[in-house]
Image: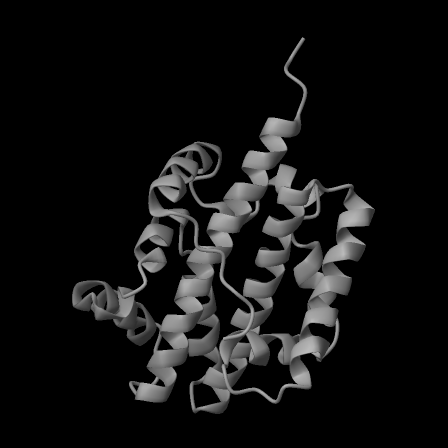
Length: 205
């Protein structure tokens, strides 16, 4: 994995999460104020063409050809910078929106691969809804470096994938768990976007 996943200190993450949850119990629903301020802009720019597949490959894999790394970085940076200029984002809001775009585009890539691995279209769409329902509350569990060794947690995640009707194969389950993790990370990033937005607004008169 080449793009780093922002992993704040868990104590700091917990404090930020507590504030963020007050603003958005389920931020992946993308509240109107977030939409109006372009939280989905980077995602939309990335997925406007097939370039997002390069970004997703570089994000997910450690063994990508070296020439793809600067290409993926450029694609993500251009999308992020264009959206930041368009919406006048702060540095922190830009980082959050970039993560939302990166995670969302990578989820799309994984869902496409899950379909190619034999999952029915209806099952993929049902699982897409399950990924979108992952909440900021799940973030702290995924932030643990060894979350895959938490058997109760991974059993719950596999259950979500199986309930959607995905094939019970190692390949599909690995991609499903990755997508669920990114769903929680995306929701957390939307929450941070909202938190920054709230802090930047002038107090009521």
